[in-house]
Amino acid sequence: MAAAPSERADAVRNRQKILAAAARLVAAGAAERLSLDEVARAADVGVGTVYRRFGDRAGLVFALLEEQHQLFRARVVEGPPPLGPRADAGDRLRAFLHALVDLSVGQRELLLLAESSSPPARYLSASYDFQHAHAGRLIAELRPDADADFLADALLAPFAPSLIDHQCRVRGFSPERIKAGFDQLLRSTLESGAVTAAAVEPTSSRLPAEAGTVADDGCANARR
Image (cartoon, rainbow, N blue to C red; front, side, top):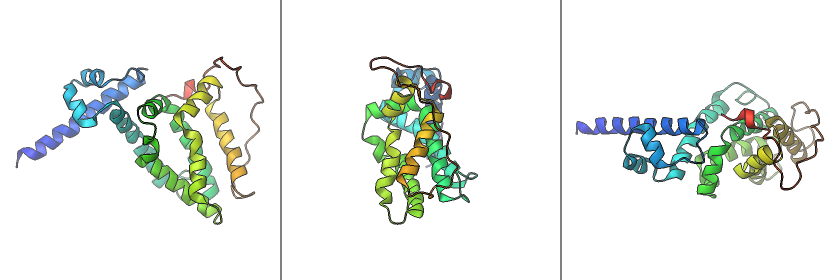
């Protein structure tokens, strides 16, 4: 019986070492080449330990994402307004979408890995459940007559990792331009006057890159 707490403590330490090593590899630009063998070497643990803890690369990627989302969730639930409580529902929804843009752009390599490993997993994750529930509550407050569940899915749909990556890497959109697009989407989705945030200045009329070409990565400086 006395050995059980020590085993649990070792498991927790190993998990933290593995996640820290994986995060270092991703930060060094090795997200696409991330493998459980490489993470095990970087964490100085046996590869069997990594497989037992996370199962496969997708499990490891989702664990990394969940750690970041816990921090994001804390900002939404108990952070300062307008993202946190004590703000108008329209301002909170706008701040929430803007913060999701920053999160999605900053983690897009990991999010792309997760999407390619298990496309349906995004919609079954605790993070998506939280995002959908939070957006739905705010929409219901702003538009009691609307289908808040559907509109929450509609507002979250543009955060598909492959679309965010396409907008940044191919179209050359900056995070600010994506946020301005969400402001326009909010204004067209919700009743006039429902969102109290000030109107955003019109974005540049710059033409998109021609088909088959790649524009400058507009989100390159926003990666974490």
